Length: 202
Image (cartoon, rainbow, N blue to C red; front, side):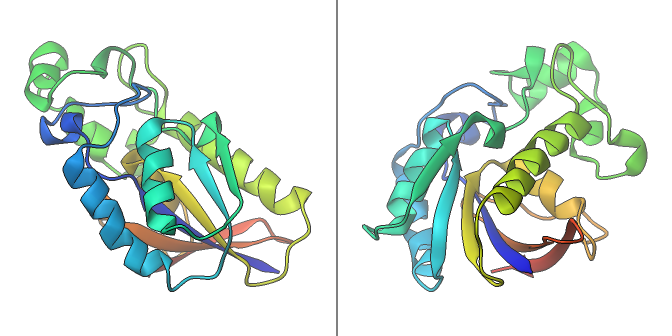
């Protein structure tokens, strides 16, 4: 049995616009972010979603609500779908992070290389621990309820979450995926074998 996860990033926030790292900081969508979610809704409307699973941060919840366009779809909110906790980097701009922690720190953070998989900001969460948190939640959902093969599940989350999930899959791209606000990618979970397979951006 295969479950089809459609994972999307939230719309723009003021901190995105200012190039500040958000992490667990609960920043709401700005007006442009709400407009982006309306565009995302055009793609979401073509799907037959069984449920929306959402991060508990406002920017993810609001994006999912707008993208559903009034459709009645079960909605589940959980902290395990949050962005990585960025520790001392939260609230800082790229330039401030480079100045405080060194110029190569953002390169390591954005890297999908195996040797950088356990990287973390000071007092923050490791990228590997973030992926483990995401997968545990999504796999628990897949194994704990009755599903039909091909069921479509929306996941409203964050840029780091999207990168982590996509690049840990079989068939993942060799170079980092682009993660603009409201990007949406399909990944499939083969339930009996606990395999994750990347399908592509939609």
